[in-house]
Length: 145
Image (cartoon, rainbow, N blue to C red; front, top):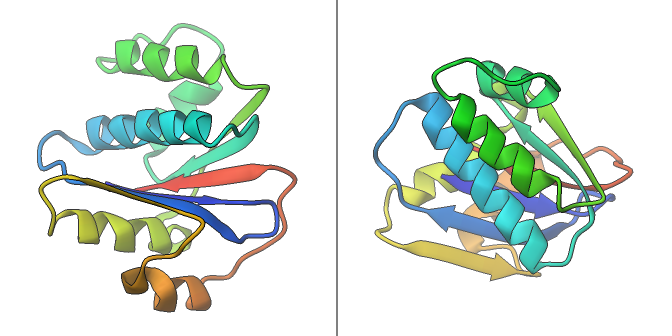
């Protein structure tokens, strides 16, 4: 799985790469969201947006009512961790607009451990970030894939 943290201007703050080869899309995206929240807390971020391309998960995260889906307990875990931030927005993003996170996730498949970089973009990601269309944000955001 891959996570990129950017500031409000789209500049890379950090990148996390974690190898995980089990689970369905919802479980993988849940694990990525939990890792993103932990990473954001470690970086002392308070206002964040988490974007991902798993519609079922992100619709459940946006709903204030209890999730009765099989992955409902995972949604509760994410919401509990998110409650420790000043502001968290969960946003579904089409996979076409989440390519940087997918490049990171593909890199994760080559590793057997977690890799984290702060304030430095890893070389394998430079081209994707340059191609990516970065727009202005009002908070720091994380893309998970």
